[in-house]
Image (cartoon, rainbow, N blue to C red):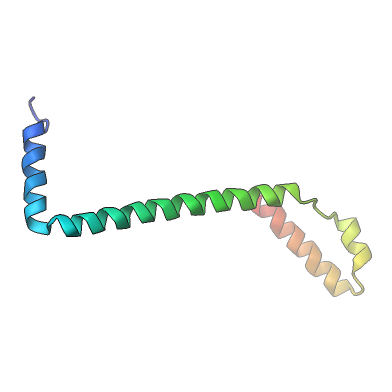
Amino acid sequence: MLGGISIWQLLIVFVIVILVFGTKKLRNLGGDLGGAVKGFKNAINDDSKKEEKAEEQPSITLEEKDATFDSPVEKQSAEKQAADKQKDQ
């Protein structure tokens, strides 16, 4: 193999890494890396579940919001929030 890494070169690098760091530190590093990957997957799944719940909830139209507000300031605030929500989507 020209320019490639052979199995023997990988084996030598692996042995040097074990000698430098030791098996205990490598085991801890592997456990930490595994925990980080598991936490990342859980966060991704939680976000997708939250998005699904948000899609399932019925959205309130501006006409329905108009009926629930007493002052024009509340109405304007609700309209602005609805417009911001539309921009985000």
